Length: 170
Image 1 (tube, one colour):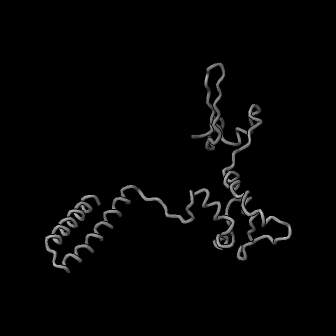
Image 2: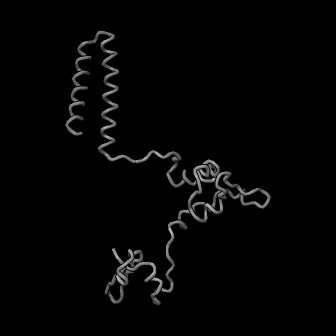
Image 3: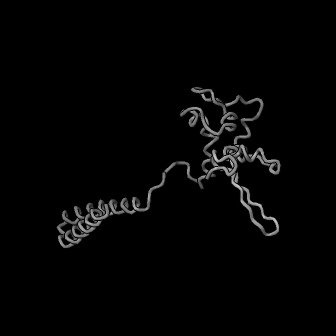
């Protein structure tokens, strides 16, 4: 959606006014919103400020005057600068500031500190089916070794059924 005033920039400020049960909406870019006198209270919301606010309660001992400031030996980034700009200077910063950022990541991610990513539901189903087929193949080998041929035939048929379904879906 473009700014309703300049029709050039994306509208990032959305104002809803309700006066005497009459609702009016206005969609402006930050520049046009700042020009309006009736919005002199306007202070652009910074996502970076929000995210870095999570960093404030961490590592109170490092802010002590007698402890040296932790700095990345590759790019020179220090923790205060990271908090200010909201991103690291290089890959090595993740190692250098590990003790500072892991508690934050753990808190924000509900206890997890390792990224596992997301997959579409169809991909999860496909992976479960693949695991089931592999397990059935192991069971089939065991059944053949102990000469349980009826069980082996049942397992073989189930494997074929699952593989057939996968071939139809993919």
